[in-house]
Every structure is written in C-alpha cells, then in structure tokens.
Length: 311
Image (cartoon, rainbow, N blue to C red; front, side):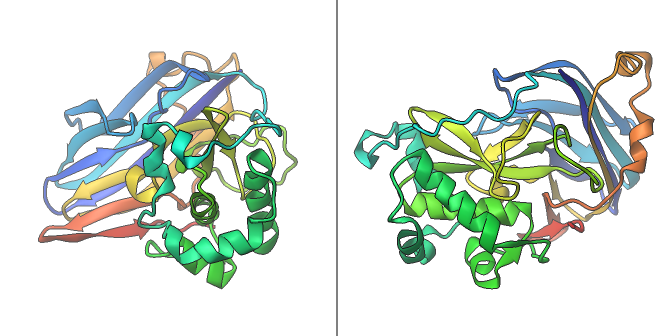
C-alpha cells in the first residue's frame, strides 16, 4: 500500500530566523519512502541532518516576511494493522538493554515520580508484559476524555487530574504510567490515515502515540484509539513531545497556518510531484495541529512552546 503524506506550513518572520523542521518519516524497516519533495517559498537553502534519536530533521533560515514550507511524499507501507503480541514479556530492569534505560526516566511532560503511586495502585494487579501495558491503555481510553483543551505546559499529571486532553496528552500519560511500572516507553508522532475505520473523519492532522519495550523490541500502543490501526508512519521519536517538536524556530517567526495530508495513493496521482504538482487537492483539509511548535523570541529566553489549535 502506498500513502501520500505531507504538510504545508505558513510563517511570517520579522527577522531571518534559524529553524529546524521535523516532518519527514523516521527511518524504519516497516516503511519505505518512494519519493519525496521539499518546496520552500521564497527559495531558501536547507539541509537535512539526523538528531540524537535518529529523526530526520531539516535546517533552514526563515526569511523576513511571509514564507511557505511544503513537504510531500509517497511512502510504501505494509497495509497491515499494528502488530499485537499478547504474550510479549516484560524484562526486569537489570536485564534491559542500556539504550532503553533513558525511557524509564522522568522527562518534562512525563513526571514519573509524581504518578508512581497511582500507577501501582491502578495497574500493580495486572500481569507483567503486554497485559500490563494494555491495562494502562484501557484505563486511559475509558477514563480520560478526548478533546479537553490543553496547553504547551500541560504534563501527564495535569491530564490525570483534569481527566482529559488531546492525543499527545493521552500518550504522555500512558508513557508516565509505563515508566513508573518499570516498562521503557517512548513518545511517537507521525502520519496516520483514516483507513479501515468508520467515518465521519475530522480534518487530517498529525497524530501522537507511544511505544513500549517488550520482548526485546518496541511495540506500538495508542491509548487514544486503543485499537490497531493501518498505515502509521512515525516522524519523530523521543522521550516526550519536547524532543519531537515539528518546528523549532530560534527567533521572532510567527506560525500562521498548517495543512496536513495522509491518504491512500491512487494510480492517477502517482508521480505528480515529479511533474511539479505536489498535491494541491489536499489543501482543503486544513486545521490547527495537536503537534508542538517551539518558538524562541528575538531575545532568546527559555523558549515558548506553542500549540496551533487542536480539536
């Protein structure tokens, strides 16, 4: 199965603003990029680099005035739902690989120690391994209301107390519970199509979920939808949303607009990008995003995390 994925951002900057954009698929054997294009107006130099989590980022300097950044790609995926392994086992902490230990620790949006007592009270009864992670997802899916507005300062503790949030908040709470239970868990955001699920469908957006480390590998879990989905394409993987902001700008650049598309590719559209047509039919699917943007004013400071809408 081939998916057409991409996004378009509109910016307006008072000064030339160094920026990092994270919208390209994360390198993964479960998918393959067939083709991809970048279009930046006005024309701006840019280059790719891999961050510490192997995410494919792009560096550029936003020019003064309005600018548009557009990424478009076709990605080959299996077409199968997320794999499920009910018998997957949980390793004891002393047996975990060194590189997974960072995902057992607290992070900005996942203050593990603050929810440790609640995690053990709610899930300490559950069998170790897959069943325990699934118990976390089941509880969040039932008890946390989707759509409750959150802010860029909202942590998993805030979500737990308020009883609601957006998709990234569901992921942060699940990660926090898993880490408190000594299960490595990491944050993922990416493209996810509306394939194999009933409508009506809201306007397309990025989606956030999480991965838990069981049986010597990472497995996909989604407390928001709590069911295997078809066609997930990870973009950013990290400790929490701070590590995978879709845009980080180091200056006074105002984020004006965004469009996201994730659709099954058809034969009639195949190769459009190579002909200079980058899928303008998608521009009607416009909304604010639940993904995070990091913006730093011209005086620097500590950085302001800003969310564009989110519904």
